[in-house]
Length: 245
Ligand code: ADP
Ligand code: MG
Image 1: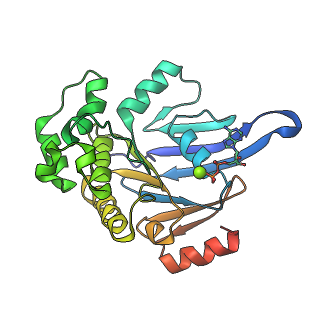
Image 2: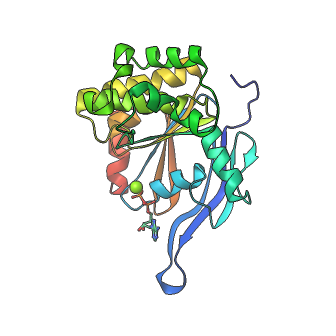
């Protein structure tokens, strides 16, 4: 657990322009946000509003055109590609819509893969605890093809947590799951925030998914137009409709 009240992620006046000249697209137009430790933030907005670009810049997968991104006190701007790669590996976890598991490996092997790639040893107790927390149990010895979608996403969540990252980013993590499985995965994500103190940022289209977050940031045309605390699905849906999403 962190002892400081520093935000885990700080975005300061982040812009991202794609292309140049008359065909340039301003995907982000000066986004600033401080995300505290152990917070769950949902990012919403109409298609093309800049959600994915924001996530990519915040996670160090893409570089802002201007402005700064800070993760756990480290400013990403100006970092060399190799330092950025190391930061992503050690300090950031990812959960995608499409699970992205390695088919030939068991669930357990998939979970420890980020550590192995970093040349680090898995902490056996932590691995066992994660497997238990995400509810995999004996399933941990199975390969992805032998697991349901919800189980595969649980593997991906454990894999995102194995390095004890500063922040976990999710891009529509429940987008490929049926309704009730999606709710189970959201409940798990909420528990990960509440019991492990994990900081989590999730892009979603789904107002019910967003209602699991502590705060929703609404994007429109590359800018944050509103932050909503203690969101409910109804309030989120109403706001989204007004944004044209
Ligand atoms: P969202 O995830 O909210 O749908 P994106 O962040 O994907 O929005 O895109 C925001 C804007 O930036 C869109 O107009 C999109 O077309 C543009 N954009 C995103 N990525 C690129 C890229 N690699 N090259 C050019 N334009 C891009
Ligand atoms: Mg997107």
